[in-house]
Amino acid sequence: MTSDRLFVYGTLMRGFDHPMARLLAAHADFLGEASCRGKLVLVKHYPGLLLSEAPSDLVHGELFHLRAGDELLRELDMYEACGEGFPEPTEYLRRLIDVTLPDGTSGKAWTYVYNWPVAGLPIIESGRFLEH
Image (cartoon, rainbow, N blue to C red; front, side, top):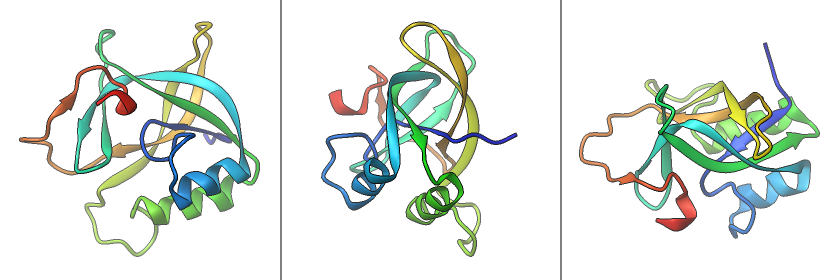
C-alpha cells in the first residue's frame, strides 16, 4: 500500500525557515491540521515520533498531498537519513500510519518515525513540537 500524503510534526511544518520545509511547501499542497497516535520526544533541536496505540497519546502536525510523491519522498528520505546507503539502524524510518483530521475523518499517510533509543530524551507532553 502506498500514499501520496505526508504527515509532518516537526521542522518540515509550515512556517519553519528550513530548506526542506520550503521544498515540501513548493511541491505539496497543505491539506490541514492532523494528528496521529503517538508521543513526541525532543531529540536535539528537532522531535522524534514514537508510535502508540493509547488513545490519550496524540501527536499534532500537518497533512500534505504530495504532487510528485515518489521523487519528493526520496528527497525527504535523504534529509531524514533513512534513504538508500545510510547505515542501519537509521535514525528515522518512513512508515505508513493512520492520521486523523479535525473533522474526525482518517486515512493513511507517510510519516517519519524515530528509530533510535529514547532513554533520557524529554517527552513533549502536549504532542505539539511548536509548543515545546
